[in-house]
Length: 444
Ligand code: NDP
Image 1 (cartoon, rainbow, N blue to C red):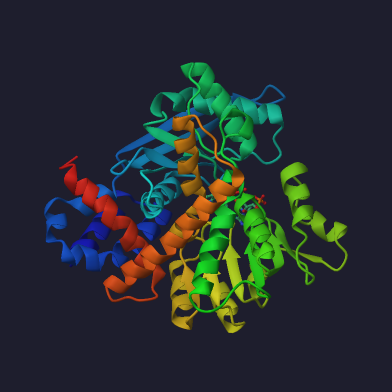
Image 2: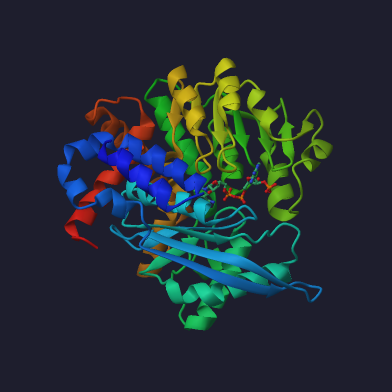
């Protein structure tokens, strides 16, 4: 058994039932074998055992009262995974499916993603099994205040800086920040994705989606290609999906389909993104409503069918494991040329293999959706310096970061003889820096 196989075997035994965490650890560690083999000192210092064990895991009770006076109790999580290269950084997810396994898979991925941005940020992730859907603003506020009443003692602008993720947008970040400020009596950059009126950065809202399109455009450019005229599918209709769609359209793509967790819309004339924004950002309505408002479009109940629509570019931007082997095979059969992951781990391991074998360009989440956290790091820099950059400045920095990420992973894959394998390239490029810092810090 190799060192990597032994660590994975142990990890599965010591963390039973954490299937998403096992999936992410397997995907990451197996691709790191060439680096591990080149550094025998890593095994001696149990580097991988330390890398896959969070530095700190915080689990807490979140009690809150609904509008009818009923008391509810949710689970709260913050996994502070790795601070070798900077303060813990990573989003909070509020969704009924949240459990420790999901938070750990996201946290582990986040370490490498954050390293890949080239900025000094460590990896963390958190959240709750609370479901914001259908709750009143007052209920959301009550929940966020209760959540922060415990979390505030564990985070800080130089310690751990959470942000949004699924179910945590501008409204939730506002309530969380308000409670932190009240408890600590300090107005600092302890959360990113803040509103513009209280220290947020321009372009943060758009950053993950825009960044996804910038890195895909760079992959296209290196092949003498571009978004112009490309039929594109963007899954999801949340923060990442909306701005991926917007930027892809600005670059000339024809986005024909999107979904929410109930079903998908198909608009052969090209999605009208302003209608989606109105429905999702303003009315908090279901995507189904799009078909009632836009003539020529259709709505289909259920999500999976979206991947059977022929397209050149697939941008999965909703959630983990939304593309399984069957959906990947359908995309490949219909001639997909580029798959870039906006969501975290949207493709199963089997789906990734199918994409890579097909010759399609596959850009993994850790690189492709790093624009959000990179811009969060830019927000942290602006907060520390008490200065604010223009939208053009932030957008230009974001674009440069995404282009650099593309070439870093391309070069890392090449260096170890796996040219074009961006899963390996992204993992290796992210890991090298974290490993070097961990070695420098001794056994901690
Ligand atoms: P949002 O909550 O804004 O949107 C999530 C979207 O995905 C919604 O349309 C939601 O539909 C849909 N969705 C969620 N679960 C499912 C499901 N099981 N099946 C089908 N659709 C589903 O989240 P974000 O846009 O912020 O995040 C999307 C993904 O991107 C996540 O994987 C997140 O980790 C990742 N990401 C986000 C970043 C950010 O900056 N926001 C940064 C990097 C990664 P519905 O409304 O019906 O639930």
